[in-house]
Every structure is written in C-alpha cells, then in structure tokens.
Image (cartoon, rainbow, N blue to C red; front, side):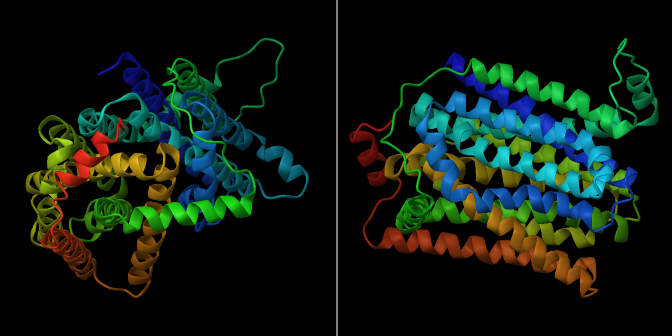
Length: 437
C-alpha cells in the first residue's frame, strides 16, 4: 500500500473514534439535562438523516477540491458540533431547553460525517489501483469497527465517576472553563481527538485527480444526483453491489438493537452485558473484513454472495441458543459472514461508481441508499416492538428477510449472466482497458 493510505486510515480511525465516544457523552448529557426519553434514539436519527438529506450535494463538494482538504473541512464541522454541546446553559438562559441544543449539535456532527464519507472512500479509488481496493476496504472497515468498539468503551470510561472526577479536578489558572459535568469533561477530550484526526487530514496526499467544474445550483445538483442514482442502479454490476451494501447497512443497524433486546429477553442479560454482545459481533465483522481483504480479489468479489444467505440463516438460529459461550461463537460467525461479503461489495461498488460517475458522486449515492435502508428498517423494527411481537418472532422475520433478499440478488446476477454478459470479466476488463485506476 502507498504511504498515503496509512495516513487516510489514521485520520479515519481517530475521527470515527471520536464520533462513537461522542454519542455516549451526548446520551449522558441528555440524562443530566433530564431530556425526554424519546430523545436518546433521536440522536441516531438526526445523525443519520443528514446522509439522506445531503446526498445530492456532498458528492459534488467531495469532487470539487482535493479529498484531503474536504476531510479536514468536514472534520472541523464535527468539532463545531462537539463544542456546541458545551453551551447548554446559555441556551437555557435564553429560554431554549438545553437538550434541544444537544440534539441540534449532534445533527451538526452528522452533517460533517455525511460530507466526510464521500471524500474518505473516494480518495481510495483515486490513490489505489483496482486490485488493491478489496484489501483497502478490508483494512478500512476493520479499523472502523475497531474504532466503534474502542469509541464506545472510551465514551463510557470518560463519563464514569472515577475518570470524570479526575477530569473535572483539572484546573486552568485564572480561567473559568464552565466545565462542570462528566459529559462536558468528556466532550473536551473528544474534541481533542477530533483535532488529532484533523492533523492527519492535513497530511493526506493530493492524488492529482481532478473533475469537471461542479454545480452550485441546488436544483441542478439534485438533477445530477438523480442521474447518478439511476446510472448506478441501471448498471448490472452497480445494482448488484448497491443492493447488497444497502441491505447490509440497514440490517446491521437493526441488528445492533435486536441483539440488545434478545440479550435482555432471551438471555436475561442487563444492558451493560448486552452491550458486550454488540462488541463481539463487531469483532466478527472486523475479522471477516480482514479475511475478505486478504483472499478475495475484485474479479472474484461476486463469489461471496452466498455468504449473505448463510448469515441470514445463522441469525435465525439465535432463537435456539442460550449458552453464553455458544452465543459468543454465534455472534462472531454472524459478524464474520457480514464483513466477508460486504467488503468485496463495497470495493466493487466503488470501482463501478468511479468508472461510471466519479469517486465523490458514487459514494454519495451509496450513502443515500444505505441510510434510507437504516431509517426504514429501524422504523419497521420499532413498529414490531410497539406491536408487542416476541423477540424470537422478530429474529425469524429479520433473518428470513436477509435470506430472501440475498436469494433475489443472486438470482438477478445469474439472470444477467444468462443474457450473455460475463460480468466478472468483461465488465472489469472493459473498465481497465479504458484506463480507469
């Protein structure tokens, strides 16, 4: 790998680490402010919705200037959102509930994350040749999962009574910082982590890739986004990879909450121990991502589709398990299967998007689809919970949905092949002959 790739990895790790630690700190601050209980899940909603609302615009922004500069600017927006959460006392003085500012501030962080993503993945297609993309995605996804686990642990550690008391005891001579709560102290540390990510952003190399002048008219940007959206969905390879990644991220977000509910109802585990199961699944995803990056080339990426069917079947088997060691093994297998089949699909989608559109625009289309799936599947899951369906029934429905969806994708791929196109070879070789990296 080129040296610039490791700089990108470092920037992504620290930015994602701060994102996940900040979520825990924001939840703690909502509790400190006696915010309504429904606002806790709304944090994730407001963070995610930015990916959907801004999809038509962030791709053009990511392609307008060098990707490293885009990542620096958007990481700075995250810092602004983080710092905004420290001013709840001021808005309460103005008659605005402090918890409303927390929600708005986390939406700003989501705004930065939505604009950060096309540049983060787009720079990979500019920096690396196609044969390196699967391996690069394996490392990026594995590192992202590690940052999720460590970020969640870091956030919980920073707001714990012991560490929070040490942070609050730090005194700056002659300056009243106004930092009085564990959540606020945690946010200062998290802002510092964002600054570290920003420093790495400054050292991301300029790949030299340049695109045509980007639109600034919102109506034209939305029209261009629609063209990109339909172009990627009409492409035979694009539609396969986009279907799989959309399903994966929607299912993955739902699985986070499903595992917590299953742990409480089926295993009798409290929330803190149930959260450990999320980390076990994430560890499996990281392992699967690394394995895919090591053994699956871009030309063979469609060979991993059956792993999605197996994953859905293994999810259904959760209802028959109650032994904790077996539970751990099962969740690691689910995570490994997920990471193994999604990483090659990510690489294929990035390559096809770069060939057909541009790095930034293709990632924006991907983010739009994936986050629509997250919002829809979480809404369906919430409706099933509200409808008092037993968690075992929900697991069977969820697993069956994954199996049926992956079967449909495989059948579609075979139909495309039956029409005479060798999608593994002709599509790839054609794009490489055209000189795309």
